Length: 163
Image (cartoon, rainbow, N blue to C red):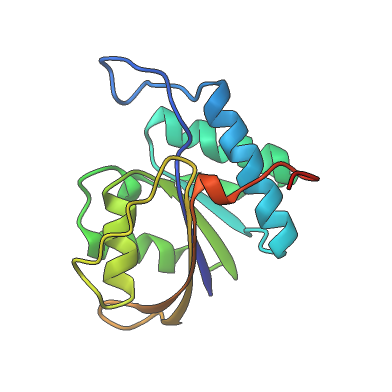
């Protein structure tokens, strides 16, 4: 099972953290991520999104760019900020997909990646629109175990045809 952890794109400022929407820059970040996923051949079977608006907007933009069925998106309460890592990991395993992409927030996603590879405390500093790729080796372990395959920061992503 492949796990892709995607931090939401840039969102509007606002006092209500749950309602902040993706802005144009955030949508562009996600278009670049979608292009890279297509080039890598890593199309998710299932997209899990935190219940916060900017994560849902990110999931919807990604699905639109990759021409995925909107039914592939599931709002997953266990991806909300502050959820214990074991519960977040359980949400990923429960998705039962060949490739699952989870859209969430920092520092939770970096901590989750470190937890899954057995390196609690490792700081990945996932930027907005950044992506971590993991291969789940032991889904039924406690915790599940994965290997880190890659980290893509927004600066690594270029528009199609760009240099």
